[in-house]
Length: 173
Image 1 (cartoon, rainbow, N blue to C red):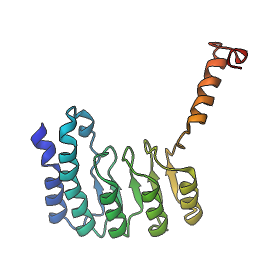
Image 2: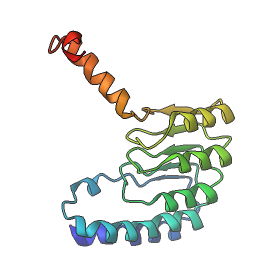
Image 3: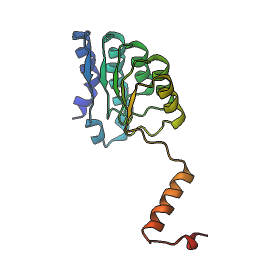
Image 4: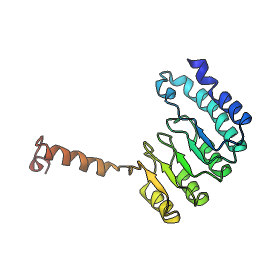
């Protein structure tokens, strides 16, 4: 199993070298969620970034890209795709560890992007998503959840506890 993960980036690189005219690419993988040994994470991240850099360098006709559940890709390698693949119309970044930086690059470069999935991307601010929608009003952003601040979280918990009669509001004051 470990060796198959180590070769994922190399395999992806071989695929895109052989099929550089790709318009649709789904590299979504849930196998990374099975990793239990933290000492291998950096090695896996490094190997798989090779594949993303290959996509960025070779797949300029790409219109659809799904890299969901690939949280081991770095934001730098994801941004390299954003800079290189100007025809992208649909992006699925579900459960990728992206931040406002990636969304700002998308807003700056993809005015014709039609679909963006952000499920599980909790490091993105509402302000940057609003900026993206302002620049591209035709975009459909799916599964965006605002990052909760500590005070937001406390308020949600208190509301839940009081609504379910676990505690009353007078106990808290």
